Length: 183
Image 1 (cartoon, helix red, strand yellow):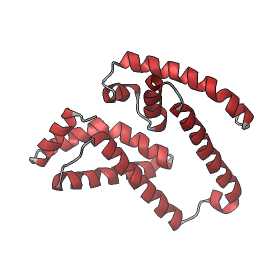
Image 2 (cartoon, one colour; image 1 turned 60 degrees about the vertical axis):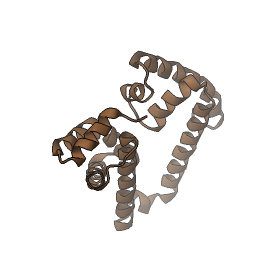
Image 3 (cartoon, rainbow, N blue to C red; image 1 turned 30 degrees about the vertical axis):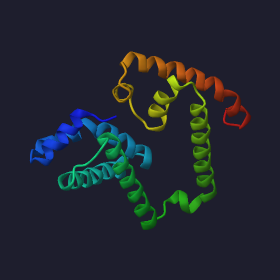
Image 4 (cartoon, rainbow, N blue to C red; image 1 turned 180 degrees about the horizontal axis):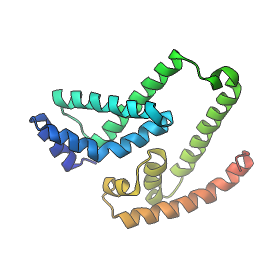
């Protein structure tokens, strides 16, 4: 989806209106923080990822400004910045957990990956009317209002689809999660 408000803000920023970038930041900041927190667990590292991402976005938009979907593009930048910062921190100093329990940590990481794959596969098998709202909510971290805007749908319809989709997802996953030892 192309947001005309975002396009207008980018155009105004490129024309020299610095307050347009401030509006972009205010509009997208909460979602960017969620992306960074999901990637690096919150705290100062997540804040650094958002700030670094916004600096990169500012520089790129000032030079080029050719972005199709500003929200998705900003989220990808912040995700990449968070990944870079995590890698730098990992290389800089191993955590106490890495030193004491590498096997337990590796096991928890594998469980998270497996769980995400199970949920993602179950979502992909849902009826299309529930699939996209659930994917955007639980795999992309968007709020219901953001999903409604992206899907050009009304907020109550999206909330209803999320609730019904969750019930269907729970029904489908209950047997798998029990069998795999998660429940």
